[in-house]
Image 1 (tube, rainbow, N blue to C red):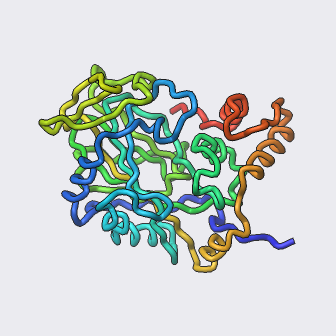
Image 2: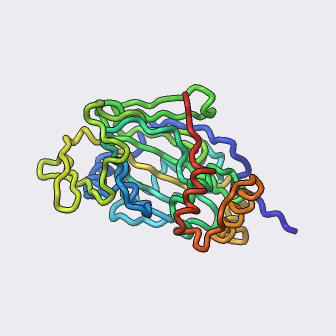
Length: 318
């Protein structure tokens, strides 16, 4: 039996790097952010099946799957500053920009420490729903197929709170924090393996509760350049421009050697949805956890509940 080489040999975290100047044309980045309005909630972007109220967090994609989706984003997607930082942090011979998105956060309490949605061989084109990637990542069962990904987070925000807190040495070690005012500064990090979070944003009297935003809400701009929140035709709220935390997230696949990149490219060791289900079922049975094997694992709500109960994000107390 041939053992395929892992393109991510271990779960060791690549060291984060700070960039005080992320983009050479920050004004052009802000122009694209403004042009991207109105924005959908992140729950709607990830197609959460129950369409219930969600967090006050909005997103738009500029690039995905290595392809630019948003007109004018190409020079920012192929940012040489990010590519060089990713090459250094991941000791990568091959760096391939893969995705780029904007995130807009309204005033809210701090998010818990978490890991970003991981990437796996064979599952890069929505072969499984986004929600399934969360238990796949936290379970540790799919390391053999994990792809190393550099994340560059850049902020444009000078409001209250909204710091970026991260744990490069694990949750048991001290954290590091990057705080506003932000203006084109960035951290390039291993966010699929490094715990991180957004701190409290805004003042407590302005907070949106985690389940207070309508799933289909849209965040746009009004004639004065401030932010306007709508649910259909109904205006929910208006917010001064500086009350919304703006950030841009860039992701790139990082391969230590060209041989690892070629191993990824040949698709001989790809995951399939059927394999994902089988691996989960085998592990649940090994643990002695009762479950019913789903007829359709991509849509079965009971299967989703079992996966999140067993493999969801671990609670953090600290």
